[in-house]
Length: 278
Image 1: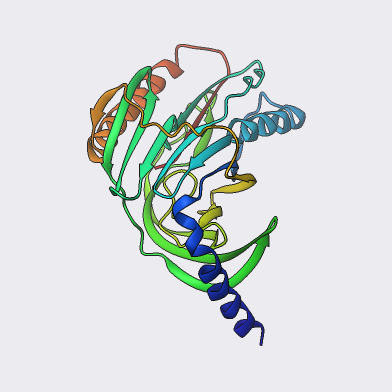
Image 2: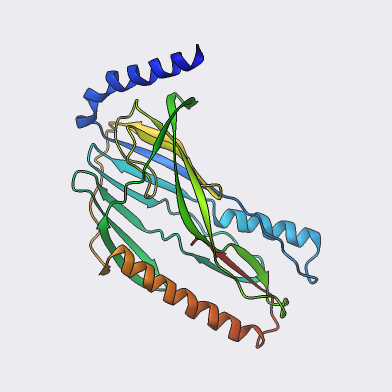
């Protein structure tokens, strides 16, 4: 009986809201959380220092984003906030997940992402990759919205490690290929194909999405706001394709890692190295 109710609700929500899609616009706020499964093996740090370090590492990856959208376009960008105070130790945080400003045009099936990496600005322009979502009958409420589950799988390159400069005999970081399942919860009550980051392509706005390492959760939605939306495609930066940008990132990452390895023996200070993403 519960399954029949979920299916009935799914179709009734779609039919009841689809006529509103063309004129719909809104602002959605998201918060990110990343799983920090690391081991700080360091004889120079007591348990209290390690606990403080983990708290600050966690805050480094807890970010807030804003998504402005209409029926066909969206702009996704990080909400600026004050920097997190330092810990006294220095660390290298290498985040290959990008950032900056992401513009998506569903009607034209393309995106433009403006990202500053290693003090250089890039303008990544390419077609939108549409994953093969599998729609499920599972439903749950997120705030006042009824959401349905969707999943897809992908192969990702994983390198997620933390080590300190005192570990002179530690092995080099290694990359592994793993299958990853992405789970999203979307609401047909807001019938647009948008979502946070690069996620989208479902029959409703994505309010929650996670890949087992990072979770992005919608914290606030304002539909048809009084303020004028600023959905403008970014312009500045070196224009590259997705493939070209990934090659540049891979080269820069290797250069940074080699530089870090070469400098490890020349500095008696405490360093923490973190590699997140693929």
